[in-house]
Length: 165
Image 1 (tube, rainbow, N blue to C red):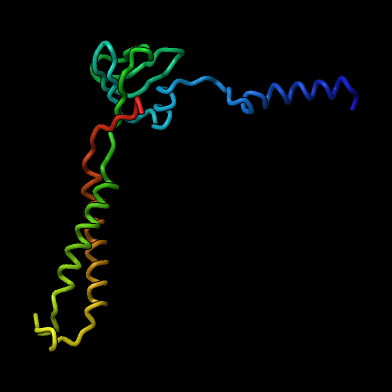
Image 2 (image 1 turned 90 degrees about the horizontal axis):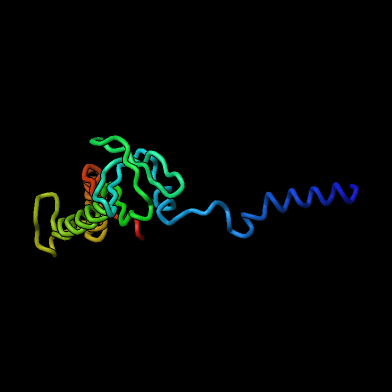
């Protein structure tokens, strides 16, 4: 390769890779980074200096957020005026965890009661393995409670703040 071609190739490589190497790609605000985590179809609630707006992001151009609302069409909000952003989220994971814990506790409570095939018995008369029964009841109760929590938590949605962090 001749020196001019090598210099040209070097300039192309520097121009192409330099912004990523310096971490200076296109500058993005904290608001744009927060909104980029969610699909544009996600319902948002925006608290700005001019009021509270609910809708979906249409576009973010320069320093203006265009929000598509159901009542007034597209609203243009300066990004400087945006104070808070909330997104609708389900409580599926939290409800599944709480349901699983509650189910495991109830299952363990039922599994610890000494019984045999005839019903509740006194401890010396019981011959079944209580440790195995306790583990099975605890795991079964936890799985059932977790599943109930997962389904029930998926039906409930609440507003969760995403900006400012």
